[in-house]
Length: 299
Image (cartoon, rainbow, N blue to C red; front, top):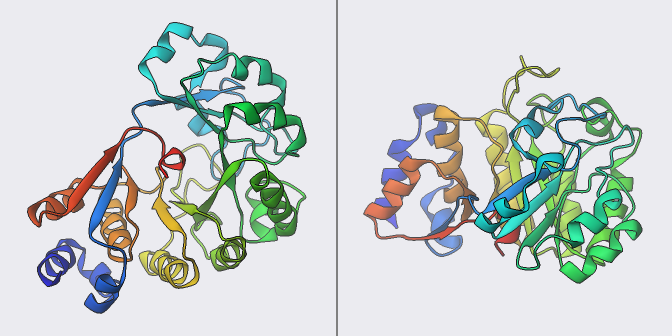
């Protein structure tokens, strides 16, 4: 692995090279492969079209604009997909109105896998969906300050964790952890990882805060790569579950560096990995497996 390690290091920005684990850390991690996730076969559907009442500080409904609006969904269009992500804007209490659309969701073609993003709400109203065996993507904040200042909600971290446990009793529930969600600052991600380590989860998905136009945090900076690597290192040492790098993360040089560093820290499933990481792995005959559905569905 020495040759590939050296080439990956040389591809990093000079300031990022010192953040990589040493070679012994790489060889101690998982075997050399990459699961390249390109979710072209998953259709993202917003149950609220482009509307969101919650308007979190990091999103403000921006990402709903890239989703298929439920009100304009054509059934024939579903033939092009293997799965659907059911999400949408949240109410002022943090819930996505999944329960109000259960009949519509159950009427979707049975061959489609379902990935639910319910936000903050009790699991009981969603239990009729168990017959479709959906995966639930569940955001887990690390601190009360994040919930209050970013999500604009009155809950506590303990409330989210109890709700996660409740969902996990009924559905395959995948935690999503946004590194630096508090405007790029330390967001107590280790607290979330400690909780997940106690739950023996199958996998967890990392995403990384990126400043988004039209939001309160548009002028903030992404988390420093040093901080991201601290979280990667802590997760690798604390958890035995599979770790993924999800779709939301900054672009350009930052993305190249974080993708390479993620692989060096043993993260083997990456959504849309940077082409430079792929090229280096291919030159060294590292197996690259391709998946066409969103990351929570590939485990």
